[in-house]
Length: 164
Image 1: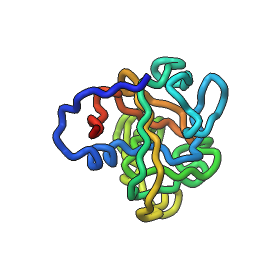
Image 2: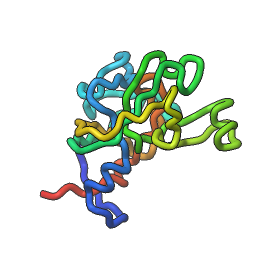
Image 3: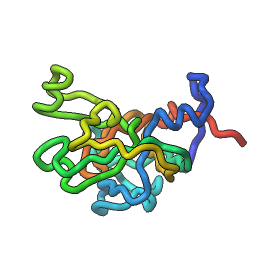
């Protein structure tokens, strides 16, 4: 069931949506049924989360918009993370752990925008392209496994109200 809740912030919906990042079509999301392309994830799917086990998606937003894209090359974020190249929006938040989090943020675990991690070698700026993105939202913010990395997803209550 899709639900719409008021947004407390006042930016236009397209600005808010772009700040949420999202997953381009083809990005694999880990579910109880295994790795599934994000376009096949429905609110009936149980997605594996870092904090809450397997949770059902509360809301899915689809959007086509110009997106600044970043490509993470294999092992860009760790020994096995990701196992193969993955392309995501620069605005997408990811969770870093271990020596990368300590080196960049002085903590064992930290969240970062992919655009802030661009180094031209392992994390590459692909420029802006019109892209079909999927935003998976849960009852509260979650960290899910998508594209072989830990991706931060928003709470459904923070999504903008869509015009009717």
